[in-house]
Length: 146
Image (cartoon, rainbow, N blue to C red; front, side, top):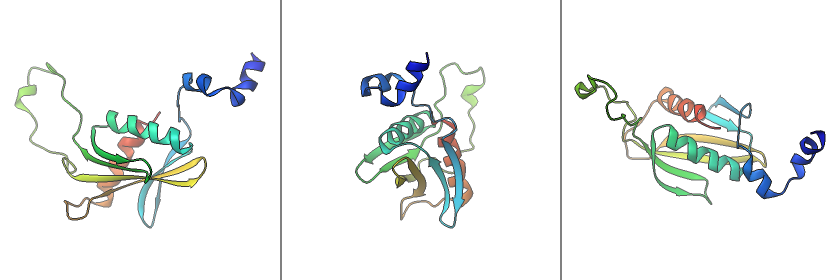
């Protein structure tokens, strides 16, 4: 067992692919003069894949992506209602999330080889969101990174 544990760092890529991308303990939320951000301590390739999955689970529709720039173009659409989610589901809830349909940009910036900074902003000319609303969306994304 010790041999297997010690050889995990030198395992071939195919063996590493079988392991979970778990980022537990490697993801945190930060704040600076530019606003809130997610700090993800993973190499770019793993961070990019983890973020793509998290966006899907968090209720975002990715409209475009530019991996070479580290940029996702997206819209928040919220969680989809399940069919038959309740007797009164047809009544609906008229309260929309403030970010519903707002064109957003998610940037993945390399701070160090194993450290990414993820920032969210809204597209120029579109509806604007407050700093708190963007932070709430980042918390949602952070909660689904694994």
